[in-house]
Length: 113
Image (tube, rainbow, N blue to C red; front, top):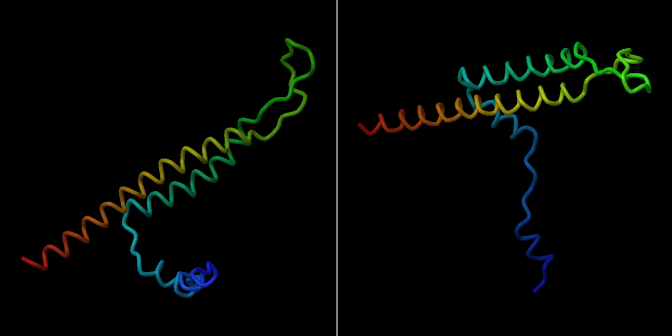
């Protein structure tokens, strides 16, 4: 038993860029999917803006000090906004994909009647 021969038998070629772009061009997006993509792009930039607006404050070494020495970009808020928006947009995109599949099934079933 030669493992290299079995690997050569099961080896597949990587898809070419042309074939991948053709597959993407075939797919039509419905309203929910376009809405999800637009909301994610908007929330991506809002994460950057809110990370700058609500900056973190580096205080002095005193225990009860209210003075900010340096304000820094709030990465944790930006990442949290990106993560939550990604989850929400995945849900909207999935709903749109389910609706697209159901309409395709409905069109195929209507051909039989």
